[in-house]
Amino acid sequence: MEKRGEFTYRIAYGCWLNDSRTEPIVCEEWPSIRIDEETLSSLDKTMKFIKEAGYEYFDVFGLITNNRWTNDIVSTVNEERKALVRQAIDIIHKHGLKLIYGLGVYSWGFEDIVATNAAVRGTSRQVMCASSAEAEKIMQRVVDFVDTTFEIDGYHLEAADQGRCHCDQCQKYSDIEYYNRINMLVATYIREKYPEKTLLVNTSGYLRWGDVFDQGQLEALRPLGEVIDVFIDVGSHGIFVAEEDRPEFIKKFGASFGTANGFWIYPPQRWDRLRWFIPHFQQNIEHLGRLYQHGGRSCELYLSPLTNPGVEFTFLCNGLFLQDPSRPLDSIVREAVERLYNPQDEAEAKEIAHLFVEGERLFFDSYTSVRNRTIEEKYADGLEDVFLWSLESPEKAIPGELFLERLFGVGPGFPTYLVQHFDAKGREKYRLGIEELLQRTTKLIGKRAHCERLSRLKQSLLMVLADIELVNRELDLS
Ligand SMILES: [Zn+2]
Image (tube, rainbow, N blue to C red; front, side):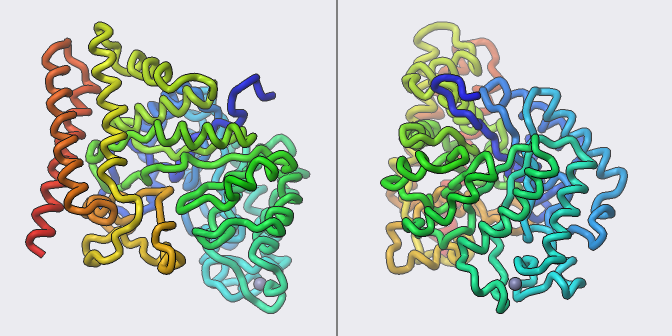
């Protein structure tokens, strides 16, 4: 039941198991599904924190596989992996959180099956054909396996972000009908067989980024709303339900509606965890406040490594807001400072708050939200393909989801965000601002007993300065 005033579904989104890990995974391609001691101890600390910050659900991909379901499904994981997955799930439950299992629907994990089983093969190597009866059975076997092997509390159904089948039979479906069809097949199966599970669908891939649903498409989504619990308009590169259509749509939609943060950093798997300082709670709270006014009562907020002070502060402020959207920002910031930094007096509390409030302002005042599209490939974020839709309207190509290094690769990547979204003037403004925050942090450290968080904050600011210097040096030479 929704308590007066709070968001009903307060979901922390992994989104992959190691994205919030305290130590980076430097020499492995994203997304790593490793479960080792570090994964489990990071998970333990992270789950404790998010529960205390007011979140109720943890939604995560990669517990069982990233892209390799076997034909018989059950041998996808061996006994050793099963035991590790169970340990991870126990940690999540121990902290009083519910686990939403990230499940690819006809996609994410079926490449081997598509390659070896003609009955599920359509026109794509990555996704199973939506018109195949055999594919429907395979999805049911996957759900049965997950549900009878592990104690999970719900499913995040992801059908649309790896494309679709265009065979003669599938061609008759528009994209929306196609993705709705497979989401509803799987959701209905789960609903009937495992009725207590929470069901979430995320819009990623439903439309081309930059587009919004028209009235006909919004109508076509309604039946889905009747069989799921939560519908997330994720907004990695723009939301799909236009804000002007949102209040009316939500009013008549069967499921709880929500978004992600509005703006977030996609955690760089291979980077030192202190290498960026980008608090973004003010932006997030503004975005979530509008969602709430429009009737949205869900959100799925991207996790990052909480050892990064900017990440930690943001995640806590967002969590406090979700529990009481009428609460003024000042009061939220004040509580976050108290809880994390235990200030000695009023002046110190104000000074610590300043670091985060101004740290966020500084970043957004210095950065250019529209992509710089003329930079050399070696400095770019590798996302140009994702943004091809915006060649004629480049002003629309705004993150959503900001990447700091290239998503793919091995070894710590170049800080692409300082080139893709900063010009020389912006970088200089950012450098000067970070210098000032560094001086203030150093002063705070000098005046009080050892505070491990402030030391991490200082380290984080120093690493940002080192990256700005690296970028300036590289660009001058090129
Ligand atoms: Zn097909």
